[in-house]
Length: 117
Length: 428
Image 1 (spheres, rainbow over the protein chains, first blue to last red):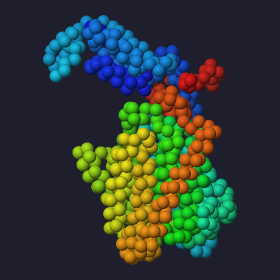
Image 2: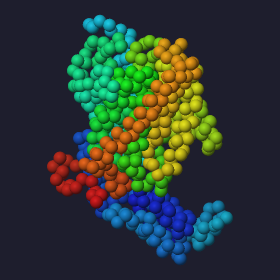
Image 3: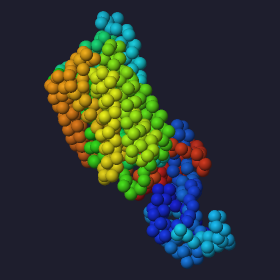
Image 4: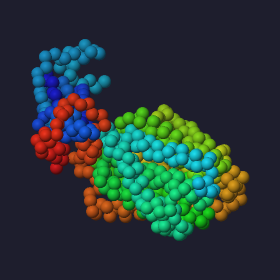
């Protein structure tokens, strides 16, 4: 069991969603985050105040999957998130100790495997 | 003091002018709410740009071409750079020509701003400024001359109270041409591109309606009966449109929508714009009710096509303006307007006069705008690159964001400027 974390551009979020659906990854959450990953900073001016914006808007996907689904998920995140420019984001795969589906009390593999009914 | 000035008329027209000017920021708000958050400022700025550019072109040549002399296709240059525009009453009115000039300027401004709805979220700001400057003269001033300034439509008997021809049909059909030339947004038809703030849309529509009382109520240039009729019809007609729009929404999706209601307010105001001072209150309400249907149908149909006429200027303005102009031909009533009857009251000729306007206005607006944008496009790229479109026009075109948080923003002191080589991440 792994937790796959994908941080992507907000404008690629829809492509990532589509890629995840196509890969039949059914359960995930996403949140808006701000990050900095080596892309060039933007300079913005508000009246007399000029600022360098060090953080860019990103979208963070978190997908808990069983081991044999890790590659599919990573591939879907890559495929949906890539534009080829600096700032496309990163994917982190981390081990997951324990998972519980609240409705049924299913735990671990059972909790991260989609139920069809 | 010049003779022939009516203080009551002048007082009302000063207020009406300010009311109409308010409509342009209101439109900016309405449009800004309908786009995605990363394009909020750019969308609003297109309306601000119209105030800037169209006012200057109007003072330079637009007003003169529209309102100097009775040439059939275009006016003269006798009032270019506001020569002779002073305190003397404008011919046919009892208000100083300066007030008449300013009132008409606000019409040119809002009409120019309206077209931006077709090209938001991808047209570059520079070319839009060029377009606004040229369009306000080559299309708006020309069509204003036809319908208001002594040109072939008004002298031929076409009734257009507040601008079904130069404002509504001109902007609506120009918007269609602009959408075709500039092309669809890169994600159009692939992703759901949703309004980011429905409250702005409602607030903008409310302020537009408020301003429209000056737009229609001022188009009699007086406090006379036609003005009073148009004023009250501006309340009645959009209300009827709202009621029918609610019903159409209920039939289609079983829910009455807020953005639908905001759209209905605009459609209702547009419907009564040409007809305001010419039809009875009862017919005005019927116009509002019936006129809702074609605009509603076109909005539903348009989103299924590849034509990314983004904010439906054609449906809201072009179509409703067309219906309003034709409606006069059927239901104008001399007992109410003191000018002419329509077909329903035994004067078939009026319908013919209206038909000319309904055919000529869309044709000229569409063709002229299409050619104009093609020419501008030959000199400079009209639209942002896909990469820029993805980043959003606010950051790319203006270097600002509407909803900036300030987190991660490092203050640059004047000496630090050289350290930053390229301001915006190179979208390559």
